[in-house]
Image 1 (cartoon, rainbow, N blue to C red):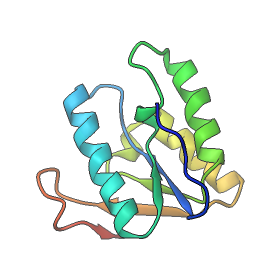
Image 2: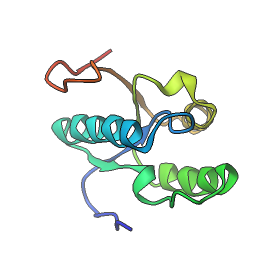
Image 3: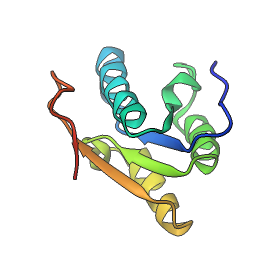
Length: 115
């Protein structure tokens, strides 16, 4: 389990988990984590706080609590394919939390950009 640092602004990383392999999930969220760091944010990566045996409902409770401690949401390019990430998007809109969308090729982080 990670602990959150205080001070810098935090970016909640949001993306698809269900239906992907653990390796795919880790690769995608690591790319989002790098983008957040490159933008000067402390990345908050929910998969680091949620055990693999957690129920979807339990995972969402943990995720939303983490999101509420952040300053922005950074959506991975697959977020729209995720029921949970769509909920996180709606929560961000309801509380006026800025949302950043990123696009990147799965194999390379060198071409990441904000859209």
